[in-house]
Amino acid sequence: MAGIEREMQPELYKRQLDDSVPCWFIARGRTEAIITRWEAETVSDQPIKTSEKPKNSCIRTYTGILFDFLEPDNFNIVDISHALSQICRFGGHCLRPYSVAEHSVRVSYACPPEVALWGLCHDMGEAYVGDVCRPLKHLLNMTAYRNHERRTMSALCAWLGLGSDEPAEVKAADRVLLVTEQRDLMHGSIPDFDIIPLKNRIKPWPYQVANYLFQLRYAELKGWKLLWTDRIILWWLKRTLI
Image (tube, rainbow, N blue to C red; front, side):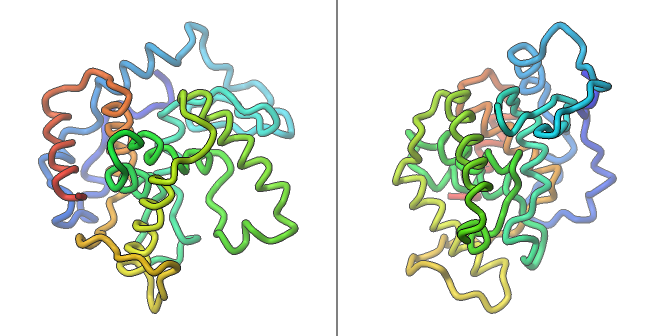
């Protein structure tokens, strides 16, 4: 389909790789199983009207869909993973680019299995409203932003079939990742919580890898059929992150 990458281009970013990402994995490119299933479930037979003029309350997403902040819908995993993989945590003030998509994948593995999907999706709303630093988000004059964030996340939870309240286990895993990220990715950072960080050090992935792994983890948690090579990648991912 138009506007969606069919293959990754390893030559564009292979110099960024370190020992945290195996090269045999990068060479495969994006799994066709995920894209095929996504097309079957979310793409209309009618072509996207990319010339359609958006309303003032709309943005156009990566796949060309219009997203309305006042009536949030038209969600799809390709838009979400693409956007989250290019949004940097901590307002960009980390040692290396570290995406919300990567953070979400790591949180999903830090959660108990029964809430892993919630862990992966806990920051999905940021694909549309952006990642505003927490101290700024909670200022009094940011009420309108918080309302839009809640509205978008509520609609996403309904689309995903998740409850509207974030489980306590997900909040706990998110905090563990936060103090781990502060240890590994920030200069002179004092942890926000008195929590023991994860043992393994974080070595951020290139955004293309974060995009791919977010989709792959989503497909696994939704019970989609995966290729045997995708299962090997998920096995490697679980072994390195837990």
